[in-house]
Amino acid sequence: MAGQLHRAASAPERALNVILKVQASERPGNVHLFDFLTDYKGARRTYEKMFGRYFSSAYLDAVAAYERELVVQNCGGEYVEGDMCGLESSPLNCAQDDAPYGYWYRTERSTGNSVIIVAAWERSGPWIARYRMSKEARGWVVDGVECHQGYHYNW
Image (cartoon, rainbow, N blue to C red):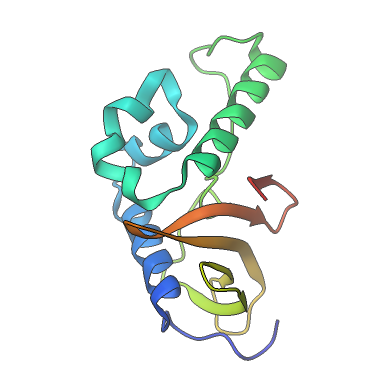
């Protein structure tokens, strides 16, 4: 993925950049966005007004379903204090950390109300995640994520 990466320029890239900045702005220990995405203990309802405008229902459902599947596999269906039961990385940026100097983007495909964007931590790559952004009445939202490690949500 050498070259062609740039800072957010198009409307869908700028919308994605805003969403990734929201995640990066969360202080350590403040996991509201992660809890919202995974619907940890019903957090989707609690934080809907704060984060709901950034994501499609299909993406959120896919993340929550995968989280539930992992909790069943790893902890018998119930969270166990001190154990890693669910996702070990963000289902949004596919990492445990955030890009220290922001993200670099490249739009791979655009078909009207749907855009595929790759994101990287450095201008020269490698890509960390591929995003499907969908245009809804409220604006551009994350509708699917494919992680470089092979995980994917509504992809």
